[in-house]
Length: 124
Image 1 (cartoon, rainbow, N blue to C red):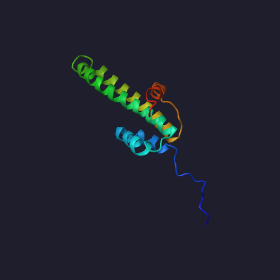
Image 2: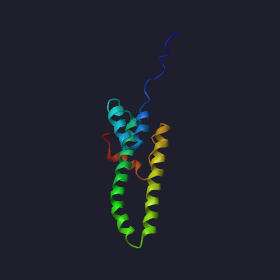
Image 3: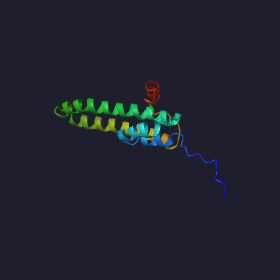
Image 4: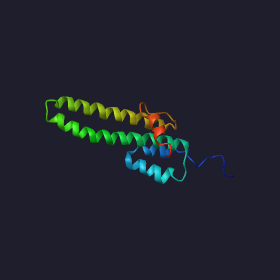
């Protein structure tokens, strides 16, 4: 039986793309263990998007912690909880859109931040 030389052992960055969406630690693993040695266009694309998504998420968390505490102790308790829920759901929806693109092996930008991420992190 002859070996089939048509089968590619490379996933063209799809695995790194998917892993980058699985927490910040997943992003670090995808970048340093999977992408750093074998850079691919798809892997770079999704690593850029997830990096900006995580930076925005962490920034919002820090800013929101201060705002939430001030609203919590004022009369805006319901407003604080509602805004918190809207922000978290919004970030989750952006994450889902990006993750689906990575699973499908597509270079589909995340709404609002996708194109900005590609311009900001060209070195990845």
